Image (tube, helix red, strand yellow):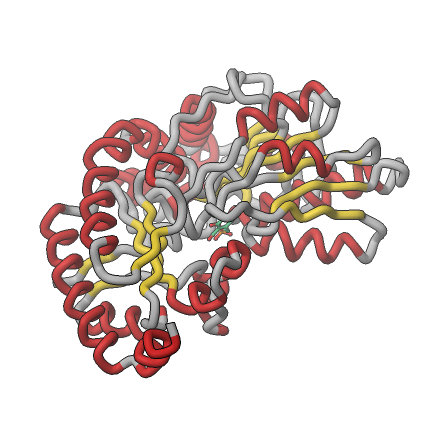
Length: 393
Ligand code: PLP
């Protein structure tokens, strides 16, 4: 059996999305900016796709959705755009508040901007892996121009207080950006109720194609272009449009929002079943309260068992999981959020992330529980760290 439980890293394409994209690789390959029939005939699909994205976010038509190549580009565009549009023009307002557990496309970009005089406060997670709204508010100064905070964390699934902070930002005339990559299709989203100025998303995290993402921009909060050289995307991002991928992202987003209920009932129940079984193993530790997390994610640590060892045991049995963010996996880093929680340094090396999708089945979860229990028993038996820890405890 093969079981894919690494859906926070990427997801499989929804079969409906694949079918919808196919004609745009074959007969419908015109450039939508061309004036001939080939160009004109793809435009309705493009409009439909953008319409799907506006509907999925419940975003007013006067706001912008700019299609990008990925969430990394969207995050770079917001932060560098704000630097050029606001900070470079008014260096007195050069402060940005963010969290210490953002994706590297936020944290690395901010570190880059630091060299250009941007002052950054990274607010730490609390002992449960959450972010306190008060800590964000306390970090704000009269120089703060932007708060950037992810909607849900990619490693723990913990949902951050976006609604409250968006209200606070609006009241205090501070720009607010949220990286909603891990929230789409998992939590209800309604931009008429949450006051975000910028919101990032990425198709491959919700069963769309890789290599396409988006940036929502509220009316009046325009950013300078990162890519110049064409009039595409209303003049806001140059480059020939990748119609097939945009069509795919539009349908994938519509499907993702249509399945939010299922994610929060059927898939949440499967995740909870997996979580309950793993929690019963001795010395296990699940990060974050169940009800505060996205319904598909479980980050668990088993004392004495290296995360990588568990990963390889699972992999041998056909199960794909992760020790945390795929972006850090090449260097086999300790799990950054576990380090941030910092309760116990060992936790950082023993974390395993299991992330489900709406395509995950009951049989797959039952199989995973069985394999996980056997692997834990085998690895505990051979783990000298565990023996040592117990001996000194
Ligand atoms: N932001 C978050 C929270 C993510 O989890 C990821 C991917 O793991 C990204 C941004 C980057 O997404 P992309 O692969 O589309 O650049």
